[in-house]
Image (cartoon, rainbow, N blue to C red; front, side, top):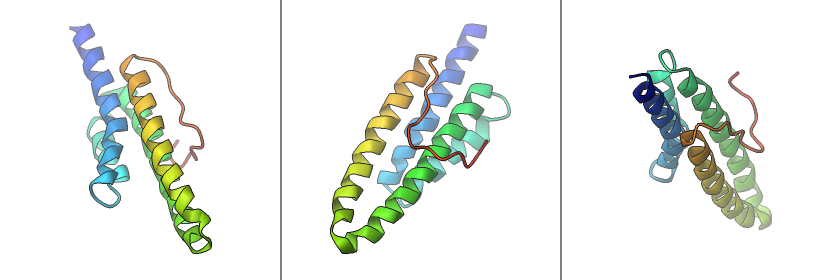
Length: 116
């Protein structure tokens, strides 16, 4: 029974990372998706609490970087930065989801710690 519980916890923690892809469907979905999952399970699953915070911190950071890149569109370099941020976000979230699902610890690069 404990093994099923641990697997469920890893699954929910992995979903916290993958829920950020909702941002490709609707505005601020990259923050709202992980936030909802984190709020639902943070009290009963410590791994979800930890990974949900990591996901939220990274997605808030990415949103800040995205706004800065958007402002730089007016000096042309912003287009390249927007594309680079999207690719970076995609790759890093997949890496975090895979590591979390394996039970390994993963720290997002360039993540600002908003939630502790």
